[in-house]
Image (cartoon, rainbow, N blue to C red; front, side, top):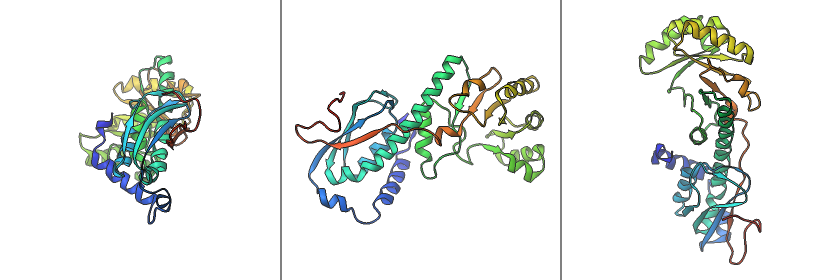
Length: 294
């Protein structure tokens, strides 16, 4: 999974994060100095390990070396050692908080995705669970990558990835037909068009106009399956997406034979983080907790 991230993108992101966190003087670095030290990265709550390429890029930018004990996507059981970081102590601590901010959030997203995949498997549903464009400005690359590690689909990455015509587009233009026709003029054959639909009639109009995907938005689970079945009768090849009001507790109710995709903004908005910490090792002392798994 790491190979899909171009190195230049990683370096650009890391430089922005480091400049934001230390815009002028590194006062703490002055206190600890430049002696060589080793730090251990600890996982303190259960979850999927995610964010390795970003953490590596952070410490590489600071001339530190990191040695991972587990591969990306591993289910971690606390408390365990995840990696060792070596370098000048001031540089290790310069990257500490940024690295932890990334790995806790990335792992949180991936863990949530894995939990939903378990529900999907138990239900025997063959569709896709997808994230949305409801991402944190400046942090989208991490959040979208974390969806992939967790087994979810990305949906569209940005406004240039796929055309989604939402309620404001439709109201502004005046009709579903006009909106889809204008969108096709600029996207040609190489991009899909999706239309957000509040009624079965809108979904049929969108499919008839040439949209490849119709999103049934804020339908109850019962109404959703009735609507999806009706759409598939007339347009069997259209992709039917369910969205709005879906939670981990209710997602199973939205899974059905006529639903191809379930999208959730909560995947990148309402997730719990996985707890990690970074501790400088001192000879003869075990960091953080006496019970640590190697």
